[in-house]
Image (tube, rainbow, N blue to C red):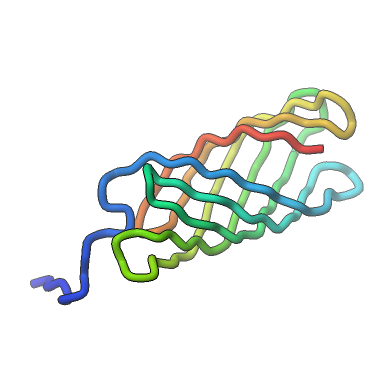
Length: 132
């Protein structure tokens, strides 16, 4: 039989909240332009529950061309200020796949989705972004 402790106040995200995640990532691309490694910081808002994230970002673009698939992995940490005193911290792992569009050699747009695991939750992010 499972018993919850006296300080348990529910799951970290307890109402199936939708969320917004704004990220800034800085890193380096490989000389071939097919790989990217970066470090990022993000602002999280799950319908009023605010937080921050810190992560490393790994990306692979297996094909070259105007349109190209993208494979992505993020590993890091999130902290949200929820119903617990001081909020809760959790690891972050995200697997993503998407499509990139190369406007110029230095300007790219992308659309990605996948699976994000953090704060006792499985989320499906939809990411729009620009790389320059």
